[in-house]
Amino acid sequence: MIKHQTAPPASLDDVKGWFPKIDQMLFTWFLERQERLGETGDLVELGSYLGKSAILMGRHRRADETFTVCDLFDSEAPDDSNQAEMNGSYSSLTRTAFETNYGAFHDRLPEIIQAPTSVILDHVEPESCRFVHVDASHLYEHVSGDIQAAHIMLPAGGVIVCDDYRSEHTPGVSAAVWEAVAVHGLRPICVTTQKLYGTWGDVETVQDELLEWLQKQDNVWHEVQQVAGRRLVRIKGKWAPSSEVQRLKDRLAKAQDKIARMEDRLARTRDELAAVRGSVSFKVGRSVTALPRALRRRNPGS
Ligand SMILES: C[S@@+](CC[C@H](N)C(=O)[O-])C[C@H]1O[C@@H](n2cnc3c(N)ncnc32)[C@H](O)[C@@H]1O
Image (cartoon, rainbow, N blue to C red; front, side):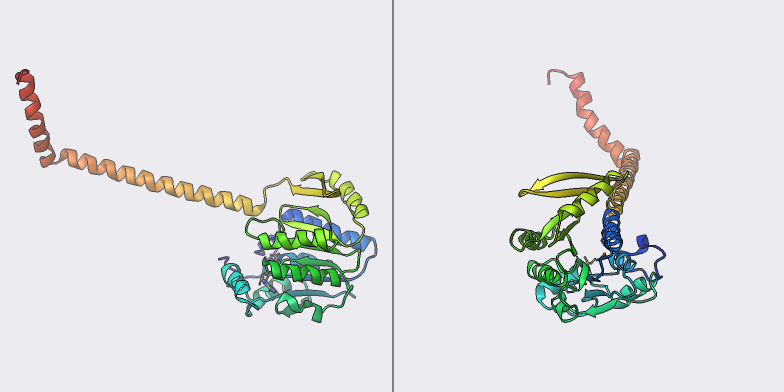
């Protein structure tokens, strides 16, 4: 279970969550591109946790735009499977912790819907958004509904980002995302290790501009693949993700701990052996076992 910090964070790195550097760069690129092109519209995040991605998205909300986040935070989930997810991964999450984090970076909180994401269309108008981040439940039924809601909230040129579209522990998300691609016309623009970026609008132009920008990035690797006859850009940060570095550090610390314990056991075994060797009973035992051998040597035929 992740322990939540109590002091307000000083930088985005201090906010716990799941928002790799490469995705921070891409969110910034997509949102700045929309600003450059004069595209207006609201921002929506389904699943905010402690605010890591919301804080970055909030930087791009213009004065006349609304940023809406929807999360259960510390309220009941709508079904048992969703509640099991909440208990397993977000049991100590509170709305207050989100608000404290968000408030450390922004003067104004976003519109907060503390409810299941299934109610989002009661609060957000169709085709009113330019950017929707889908990052709430990992269960197929929920994610499928979240993507359908995003389709309604976004006009054709809007951008949807789906988290955990390929993680080993989230097959339901993969099923919902690729179903949206294969059946509901979602066009993937690019993918990172964790997120898929797509649109229901023109994909070629945005990909061309993205590729031009990627050429100039030193710390970003990319390639172009064809998937079912469509171009798809694969992107990776060249630096190790902080979660990966932390995982390796944890493994190293555990291994060092194990070595220290084994050395300790070895030292204790040596001490015990030395004590046994020096004991009277050991010496008597040795002389008893040594006696028949000495006799055998003296009487080799016997
Ligand atoms: C993976 S976390 C979000 C991570 C966050 N975007 C970040 O950058 O760190 C998923 C969030 O979805 C919320 N959640 C799970 N099921 C939900 C549901 N049915 N409706 C609304 N929120 C839900 C959880 O409370 C949790 O905060």
